[in-house]
Structure formats: structure tokens, C-alpha cells
Image (cartoon, rainbow, N blue to C red; front, side):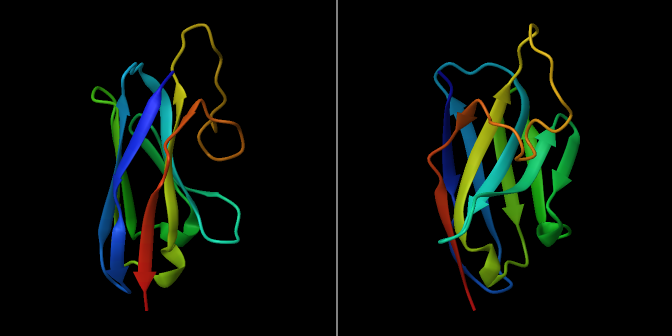
Length: 129
């Protein structure tokens, strides 16, 4: 079983910056992809950014403000969030799809349309106006 543990987050004002990090603990296989999701109160979970090796993807609302980085060897994932807005408030979750040579992958495994193999417990980000 893969355990993902998030850290970071916290509170910031409109226009400020925060970062969240995710690390795999215990059994830590290589990942096919990793991603950050967020869920605001009363809303569905949405994909924020995903990383497929060196390829990264962002949801439109965070493009130009957020940067995702994935260290494939250390199995860590970081999301640097700049120019934060109140609508970025939510619980941020790290998710991953495990690399398995016996498995065939689609090119959107971590984009929020398919179930992931592992999730973290989430870390809260609050942005005040």
C-alpha cells in the first residue's frame, strides 16, 4: 500500500504565496503520474495540476500562478502557489498512479477522469480577501 503524506498549506492573503508538498512513505514504487486536487467546501474535488514525468498540466484557473514539480526519484510532488485568490481556498490532496510494467496507461490517468491508486489525507489552504 502506498501512503502519500501532504505538508505545507496554511493561510495567506489575497495575492500571497504558499506551497504544498507530498511525499510517498513506506512502500514507495515509481509513479506513472502524480497530481494535485482540491476540494472547496460544498464543491466537488477538482484536478489542479498533474505531472507526467517532465510534462505538466494545469487547470485553466491556476495557469500562470501555480507551478507543479515532480521528483520522480524521490517520489515527491510540490505545488508552488503564487498570486493566490480567495477562490483557491480548499483542501488540497495529492494523488498518484503507480507505474507497473504489466499495465497499459491512458494519457490522462492523473487528470481527474479516472480513479487514482493512492491519495493523501489532504492539507488545508485558506486564502483571505
